[in-house]
Length: 286
Image (cartoon, rainbow, N blue to C red):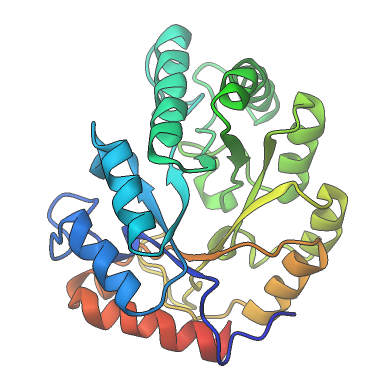
């Protein structure tokens, strides 16, 4: 495993960690200030959300790189299925292509996909997963022409109904194999996989080059809101070093992205304090 105790250049910030992507939360720092604060602290990269990019993709990407930060990715594609998805397939695919184009303009090599929940009128996840595979397979060649990889991110099973019919790394790897495009892989988020005792086996099955992102946070033993009550690394019950060992055993050597949704705690703090905590916890517990 890589030694982060004296070198945190593999640390990246997902800007959601500062809360300003959600109305009524965070200190509202502009993207330029976030970039500068990360660069000052020696972060190696940054991941943006579509909401903050707007029509400024090329400008923001250039600003980040000029500050010494790699633009590691963009969050996220639209929900592809389920009750929170756009009402028609054509609208979903149009927005999917728009998100790919935004990633390309930003210079982000990876677009994260949260699949969406169980398709209305169906039961279980099988039919929904088939539709996800169909829609990703359709978009993958377009993404390849834009030099963007698509990262399927399985979410914790608690989100299965509305936000993600994709809830295990096993199913994520199965989808990659079914889709069969070289630019489709998986994202590993501690919050969503910490409980999965088969994670190492599935990451080994994914193989080198298919792990496109690694997301850091922690699962609090007493979680009061499954969407916006994540812990800072070291606050919860996830075995962070064991998970990273499994990720790196599968040949991942990329950036490690802190992504914390914390409406009652971290989003209420000064962003400078949050960024300092990210660095300290990354070097001591990750």
